[in-house]
Amino acid sequence: MGQSIAMSVQQHSELELLGIWQRGQDLNELVAAADVVIDFSLPEGTELVLETVVRHGKPLVCGVSGLNERQLAQLVGASREVPLLFDRNMSLGIAILERSVQEAAASLGADFAVQVSEVHHVHKKDAPSGTALKLGEAIASSRGETGTGAVQFEVKRRGEVPGDHEVTMTSTTERLTFAHSVTTRQVFVDGALAAAAWIIGKAPGRYSMQDVLFSHPNS
Ligand SMILES: NC(=O)c1ccc[n+]([C@@H]2O[C@H](COP(=O)([O-])OP(=O)(O)OC[C@H]3O[C@@H](n4cnc5c(N)ncnc54)[C@H](OP(=O)(O)O)[C@@H]3O)[C@@H](O)[C@H]2O)c1
Image (cartoon, rainbow, N blue to C red):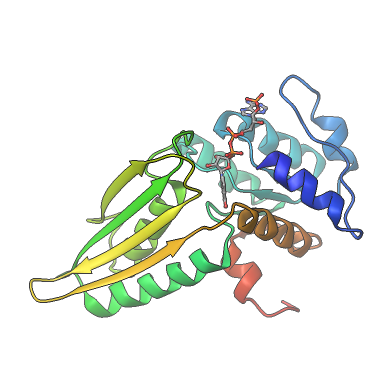
């Protein structure tokens, strides 16, 4: 993701790539000079990124999945100091899917059993995927449940699959299915760059792709 984002930034004449942070390098200098920081490392890297953006008061777009509770708490703390967009999926399609399943789950009620299935490439480190958990949390909250509530997860790892998610809602008499497939990971890159452009100048707070895609342009 980091390499793809760097390549895309270079293709946008209105964007300038100040640098790419690599393990072992000092992050302070880079962050101090940047208008916005994009983090697609792994949870351990995110801890240092959060600390550094807060130190320098810079906006952050973070797409890292698999953060533990302590890291999520650190992220929430950082969002009180700087504008921080955290989303475990940067695609428009998943944002629409999230809204749709939330609405469906709220209308159908708890009689319907919900399952979120995901298929990803074999290199993926976290399971279930951050997107599956995000969908599960959205569904559970719309039914008044905490965390991922009674949502069941199914995880498969196969080849180089960029990301398939399917949500099924089943009663004893019918089944409703929602599905989303990523055809290229460029969708995440485009989303991250749109988020980065959007968050510059925003007030400190926690934002998501729902804010980028569905909020009023002047808000
Ligand atoms: N939100 C979204 O839409 C979305 C989409 C795709 C992926 N993701 C998430 O984004 C993250 C990255 O995905 P990926 O597929 O690009 O993973 P990846 O290929 O494993 O790349 C992770 C990168 O982070 C670096 N890194 C890891 N730990 C670090 C640390 N402690 N300090 C500095 N750098 C560190 C790695 O450096 P080394 O090479 O030195 O190990 C590597 O360059 C994952 O959490 C993934 O789930 C999110």
